[in-house]
Every structure is written in structure tokens, then in C-alpha cells.
Image (cartoon, rainbow, N blue to C red; front, side, top):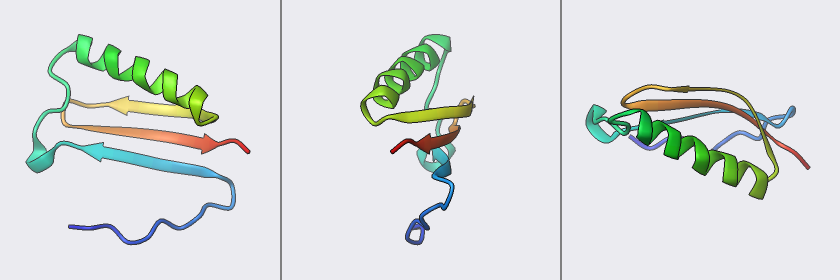
Length: 69
């Protein structure tokens, strides 16, 4: 089901969540998680983001991020 338009945060802090289609796993092992976190590290620098917290589950991911100006 589609989400509504994103509301711009006054603080610039956002909760981001991804999940596998139909509950499918997106991480099968710790190597998958490590590779994903390396990807996040690279893009957090590129887009000037601060990552406050994350939680990597087998079938979904939560991030609390802030986009710096």
C-alpha cells in the first residue's frame, strides 16, 4: 500500500524504515548486515547525514537520521 507524502520535519530528524516484500528476508547472515552498514556509511557521508540509531532485523530495517544542512 502506498504511503502518503512525506511531511518535512522541523528538526530534520526522520525515522526511516525498509522492509522485504511480503515479509521476505533482506538479510540472510551477518555478512549481509555488514555489507549494508558499509553502504550506509558511504552514503551518510555523501548526503551529509547523521545516523542516531539503527536496528537491522532479518526482514526490515529502522534508521533514525538527520540530514545536515
